[in-house]
Amino acid sequence: MTGPLIQPLEPDERLSAEDMASRRADEFLADALAVQAREAGHTLIQVGVCSNCAERCHPAAVYCDAECRTDHEGRLRVLARQGMLGRG
Image (cartoon, rainbow, N blue to C red; front, side):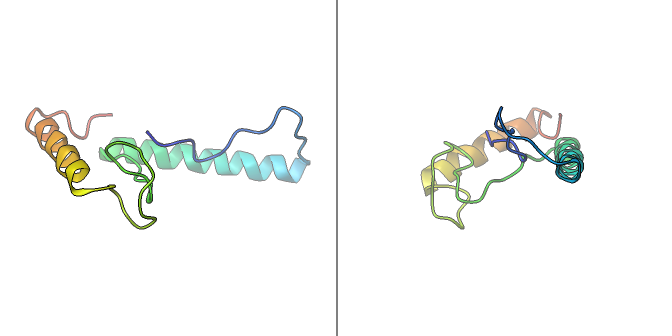
């Protein structure tokens, strides 16, 4: 599972009005992107983190090794056969 697109503020952090407006706009955009990805049936892929086991891997990789790729792709095929792939 990937982390939030917008990191939470520190409890003691104070923002100016312009910074708050910019942050709010970023939150709206992150929410819209997440809704779009969910409706499209895709998960957000975080490059450099294995899509199967969530371990760190090569910065340009999606899987840490061939075994993780095979395992994840197999689960996706099962979900597609069951009609579960693409549901939010």
